[in-house]
Image (cartoon, rainbow, N blue to C red):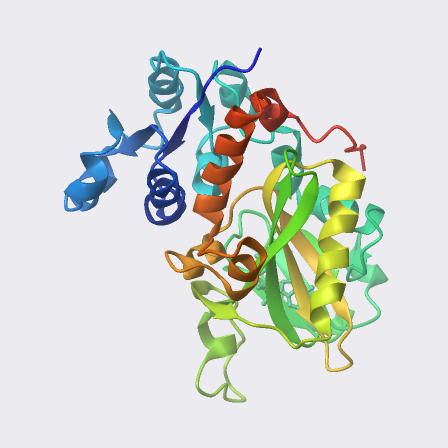
Length: 336
Ligand code: AMP
């Protein structure tokens, strides 16, 4: 039995500027769990808030309140996860929510653990930077990712194991040592459709990262990868089929449903290294709202962006009475 579905999400940049506009464009009913912190911003947009059911929660720390608020929704809703949602709610919290989550939750637990994240990309047959399990193994330039570091903050690069030892401070707790790939970062956006049974390449962005993307990096600057924004990319023609293959390989290996992103570096020789993935909508897809990306628009013959694509899948699923396919939880995913 496939009941009609409304969409539910919670406060974040992706929900407010991407998922919700997409759902409204597709005329879906929307429930939004809004953090008290975000309310002053949201209510400046009555054309959005008047058209959704707005629920409130005090703060990100009160996770029980967030879970309960989702559970007060009586309608059949599908929850759309995004970066903040996965950061605020643990696996245990997610299990307490009585509504289904788009694409399930298995893949989300992989993205949070760097070793599993990169291991999965490798298992999917993608070219990945080498990973070192200790400083002593290092034999090439590396990027060091510290425990608790996120959004590129708290990383450092070193040319050799000697330099890592020199740069590491007593407070630095190293989580992950990865080969440093020199090139341009390209974040590829995909949508794996269980209804149309295809992997759609919907667009690309790159992050603007503090001083590594500065006007000028001086010799005395320590490179900083701290993310400050995103910009859209149209890639070199010959790279498009390669990126399509990368997305399909990831879907074949995991069975992932819905939006995902493969974070890559493209080298001067045009080799593509996948260094991380996100198993859900990413902030970078918002660069294409509301007019859609080059790739998504040509594929769909209309303006298409990730939030709208998610809502379109729900509508297609309702029409075909196949909404249960939206809850499929990465069935091919194998432990790495
Ligand atoms: P992350 O937090 O892992 O998404 O990485 C943040 C940024 O650090 C990326 O957007 C890249 O610019 C850079 N970065 C991460 N891993 C690597 C790598 N293995 N080689 C080169 N740059 C990297």
